[in-house]
Length: 110
Image (cartoon, rainbow, N blue to C red; front, side, top):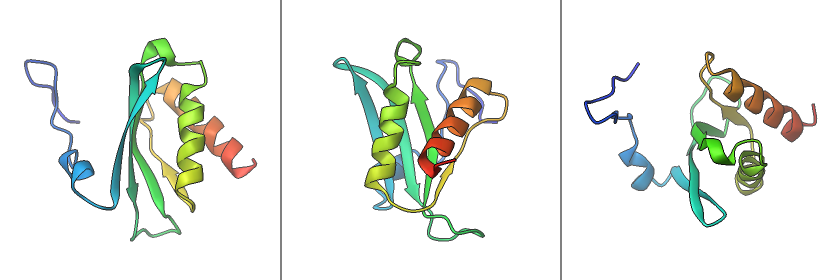
């Protein structure tokens, strides 16, 4: 668990790498002209199972949830980056788990 500082921020490992590493891709998500979230994608060259891409972090702000924004973004990422995916989520975040299972099921055809 990464601790927050006094200002409410935390130092996310590898965050700077998303802006310098050619195999990491940061996305700022906009909806209705406003910042609505972000996604961090990276290439998985080495993994025990066949795996090409990982969603390391994915966040949609509350006002944009359940409006199709997250689904649209994930579908676009799947179109842009072909291959086998890993979609990470925290097991205690039930909403995230449900969303990711839904996306994975739709993308894989069940």
